[in-house]
Length: 498
View (spheres, rainbow, N blue to C red):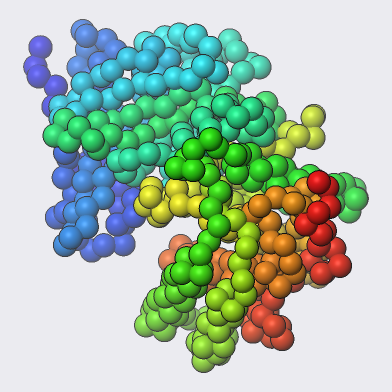
């Protein structure tokens, strides 16, 4: 049999450059800087030439190199010409991946090794070679990773969730680390981790990293974003029903933070709470300032057309006023401990099951654009809380766009969420002990998040740039720069609930 050769890059680059998960898609020189550094043929039938491959690509330009995991299927199009398509959701690839994890097997590649790992929560599983027994559905749209719902044809009441981590980074993956920690400490607010797939380059024994994870699926679950949006658009849904779910999300989030701040016997544990020093707070403020200046500078050089052009100009004129909002961090003593947090928290990271009315937290990977070390750093819980508050703002504006009616009050949803959170978190080491500290943290993290969104929308969704822009304008209008949050009288004292 003729030796199998990997697919040619020329057949992959056209759609690779359009993929959201390919961070260098905007570069004009992609073709000159992409190389195949490793490859594996998925040989489920020794009598046939393999049609499915896993390619490990490197994109290097100047001093930076990024690596990507790209499953590919090679077949013929309608004109009988060879073509290559993304095979991440192909049952053949998915069955191979799950089989490797379920059996805890290793598979040598041309220049490395793939190893399957499974947890105690995983049940014995078998998969038919070739993937003909699987139904695979891609969810979440075009994102930085690829998430799949996987079911066997005969299993209607059970599913698994496979996440292919497209950009390979060696090191400890928070998705696996946090999930294992929470399971070991008995927290049941997140779907169980069943296993993961690691890649180990042969030329560097210390550079293994996670390329895929498998979690237990949840029946009839939908994201909290989808549930709340449908509820806001449904005239038969009462405000009390919406309020109850929002408050439940606040309580769940506080319990998540309590679980992540679980006391450890070792102060060296990556989950041990730490009290931030003044130097740490000063560094945080400096980082936020630098990030804001970078975004404003980019906005000034890139330019924005359309109806928001004059508003952007006004915002840039007032940038120094906004930057001063960060200084409250250094001026206010910070006694609340920093802990491991979710890191990329928004309404899409919570799942809601209508039949049980239960909420679940998913995706502890952290912000995909940050390094693994940055994602594993301990932080203020306001990093997560700000993410949810900004998500409520997007939710309200999305609902208003669809109904063409008056704006929905997102600040009310934030108050409900934060008040429920504060009641549950009262007395915890990570919760601010006074209103001034809570408000300075709230302001800084919401401002930082809105500025991040401004850059994100500029690059990916210009039609949505008005959302973070309006939030920044609101902060400018507010006397103290504090976004709509919760009234001081609704903040429980630190001793409440002890």
